[in-house]
Amino acid sequence: MTRHCWKCGAEWTIKGNPGRGETCMNCRADLRVCLNCLSYDRNVAQQCRDRRADPVMDKDRGNFCEWFE
Image 1 (cartoon, rainbow, N blue to C red):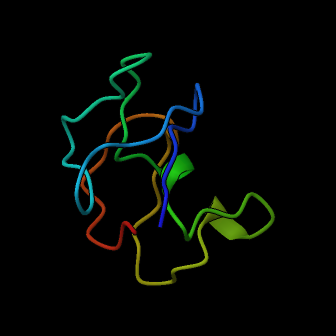
Image 2 (image 1 turned 180 degrees about the horizontal axis):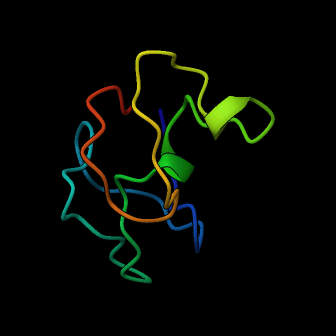
């Protein structure tokens, strides 16, 4: 599956899920953020479809969510 940066659209070159400190090689935006997660959905409560996840306030900042995909 091809993944892209939430901010600039550049393709990821990272194998697997990014760590909290990994950033986009193009724009330096954090990659392990809600906006890059498959469970992100702005139309549901807390903007996350995964009910196990703790609420995250800053959807565009790196976080430690263990349910990130």
